[in-house]
Image: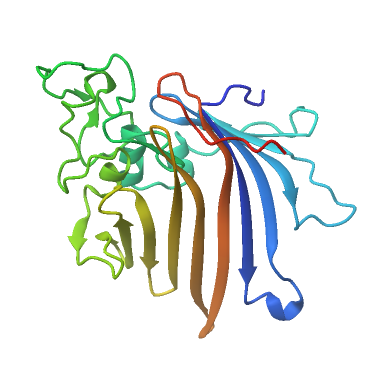
Length: 287
């Protein structure tokens, strides 16, 4: 059945303009999707429900309104909640489904909702939380099957002031620190952000982190076929930050010609309500 309980929920509004399509009268496209996701301890349960799209053809409404992922299977549902097809196997975990690299997997174990929200570094993410200075040394937990990790996963119960993982670059913000732990720090950006570079094959990825807030502010992926630059904007809330929007520019080389795409992803009504973690919520507009 479609998910009814969400560890985190939010609305995604995406807009995109493609220079390849503009000459054919196809301008900016827009999609709105409501997302519900929950961390299970080693994987995500995920649900996306379409709330509107400029791509729909008149008279040809989408049969599938909601798509869910759980335990390696994806299922489509109609608007009434009835199954639109049999579950389809897509991999052993959602990480395999989206082809996530090791740093991305590690970041999820460090802070499962780091992509849309980020607690202040001093926040204990899961009880029981240490309250004295004399704490046990950080322990490690077994890796889930099939996950190749850079360093051991932390045990949540021992997290907090005694946390000693992902310390290579001196960052304390969860999720972000694991994301760049295996990267090489290079010269700062023109805006003063710390930059961390990872090279995999012919792809170079550079992530920029704010020196003060330790938030992920920009990402640049460069390969012979494409250059994509993404910038992130965060909003301060009690206890941390919530992602407000991401803007990107993509330059692809197709048949010797450059094709530019511009887009933005806005997040609305973000809520982290997983009982294992402190709540982070943006005020929901009255209208």
